[in-house]
Amino acid sequence: MSDAFNLYEATYMQDADFITPLDKKSVIILLQFLEDAETPLYQGCTKYKKLPAIVVLYRLKAVNGWSDKSFNGLLEILHDMLPIDNVLLKSVYSVRKFLNTFDLGCEKIHTCINDYCLFSKEIENEDKCPICGSSRWQEDERTKKIRKGVPAKVLRYFPIMRRFRRMFRSPKLAENLRWHFSNKSEDGHMRHPVDSLAWDYINDKWPDFASDPRNL
Ligand SMILES: [Zn+2]
Image (cartoon, rainbow, N blue to C red; front, side, top):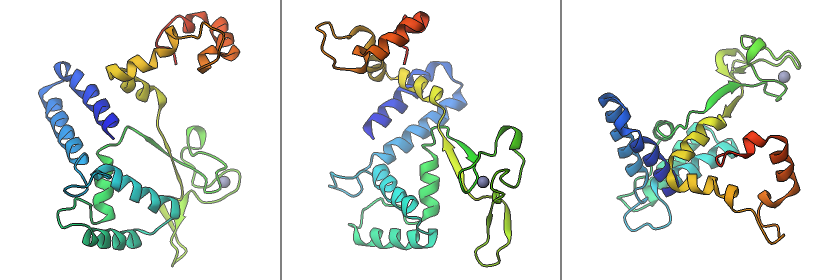
């Protein structure tokens, strides 16, 4: 988490001179959120900070398909079991709101429930999968009615370019990202993919790309 904190700090604070006062206000708010995220789960807790604790629990919910209702119940019990000063959130609503603050700009794309297609480009406005015919929208479990507007399945896509740009804004990460450019093995031993034949092949084929130390 502290890596993420450094990354955010580098990203936003390095830009601080170039942004408007309004943006600066949102940067300050974001940094306050980050400080909040770094709070130990309870006083003296060395194992979990607020953000990782919430992410671990929310991941379990997602992987096991727990309902919002059962997750709410679990959060309430955990909150009660932990020391009284704990900062664990008590409802799935507050967890989602909290996690949305750290949204790294993921794109949400509706998908076929059987993974046959993405509802994008030419089938962006379709209501049914053109391959298996399944509905794009969720079906109400009780009434069996289609809930138009509520997707049956969503793919979360993190565009790689935005992530690379953010990574290069952190001086420490940027140094690591350029490491391969000047640390190719000279003794014939392979220590990193940069020492491989495949890497040489790519470099030979696209010399322009190869000549930029920031290439990834
Ligand atoms: Zn389908």
